[in-house]
Image (cartoon, rainbow, N blue to C red; front, side, top):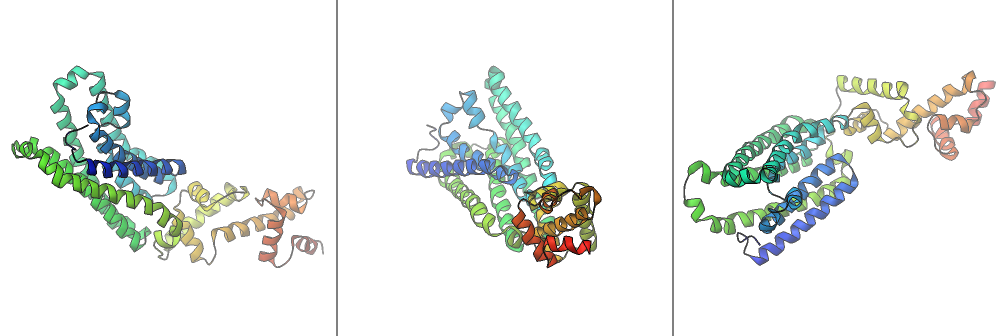
Length: 364
């Protein structure tokens, strides 16, 4: 066990929190939603970091354990914290590219670190302090960069898309998490930057009375944030709390109308029986919040808009000679209705008459 962590009570509490972070990470991986996976990866890396610190003497000797738990993964903390918050205001179709852009650099740096450690072990042993300090010189400005970038992003973009409560929540998340990691990165580099013996003489005292309590608070905060982010916000918020309800301007409304026309006329998305607003937003490269707000602004909803489109397309097919041999139920399946009962109910609600009555009215 690492002698820098001698307090068994502290170790037990931190280990318990770390295990809970790992369980949350597995849960988010299971949900298979990219935003939640980003938060899950952050929880996983933070949870494994304490386990690595606690059993450093064992982990450092194993390639597998170093890949899974090993040091150097704090290079991902800044990008992951920023990515989770920034993807709340990025269209679904652009999220993958956005994530790839911000994770490529830390991934390459971490890969180089592992190659040096296990592929060139003699070089790594000889130049250990040079490798470690070089990594520190990268992590410190990277954390500072994402701290500033995250705050600027929330000031500029979040006001347009996010409700005030969510803006404040994410601002605290970025400021607290990245503020702490920037501060701890700076502290780790101060002995090399200043050359002062103070840090070496007081390492155990500072670790025990400053960084161990701070680490406990930060990991607890991440645990609480991660739990409430899904179970509180995911169940309550989506359009009403997460997204700010401001009137769409003419340009924004025109773009949505154009893309809806493209999606329903050219791509015939309405024919997909299980089409959801998430599917529609992804196909049209629009934000789900913007779509919901557009429908609300036009006194309708996604489901009602979809049903209206399907009914109109059904009426077009009914008057098309090419489809005269189809039954009413057959035509309804062509426009995306899954069951006859649903089709007849929706048609009656929207048209005031049944499909059969509408068909007879065409023949009179």
